[in-house]
Image 1: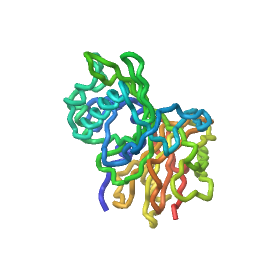
Image 2: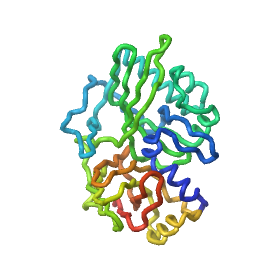
Image 3: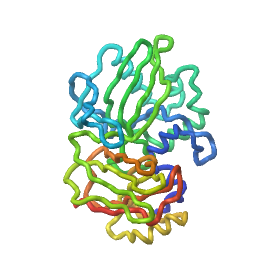
Length: 316
């Protein structure tokens, strides 16, 4: 058993990589310093872009799920050439700077006018706290001295022990400055569900347990979420031990106590807020390992856990 961060810290670190990215690191870090812009970093040892070669193409509109975004098939394997390959090289150099915790190298890869990184100490604090794990690059489009990069990644705590996490869809803008490609801005959103990936419907309700459709498919799948309530809410997922008393745990979690969590509890990420009546997707970087899982909802923003709105399920 080990004492983990209190409720607010846990919500910040796992609640959601998506929330953290969508707010563009505008929230303060735990030490009170301004958190920097998440300028795409990666732990290249986990879930790296698949190898292979094929022509780069736009996702098929038929793949667009209910949340309005599209994702290529899981087998999609782009290779970039020409100026797009130079953009990719700069992009990966930025990722490497974050992986090495090198704030000076990361800052050098930003356009001169970019103030989004905050202070050097704030940037280093972010690097020491989080990894940004690249899953794959989907497309790079170069137009003159501007480039757009679409990719999927996960923002996770440095101490995250799970090899499987939730994914974000990311859109970067880069610009050629003084002959070199530099980062300008990024926007994160929920990823689409690839058409070759099975999905399971999850229904979010106000003041009632979340409903996960059964049976769960074997192998990889995604959750297709629908918020049928009247309030916006986010969702995150934990891997939990088979003997955890879920109702009692949620009551402690909701009370904001410091929680002695078993080491077997895994923080696996989540999704940003779903508007009332909204739909979205929780896509994972791989197949969930066998075991027991808990989906928890929280109020809008970095709000409190909603104690009655949860679901538990098991991967046999």
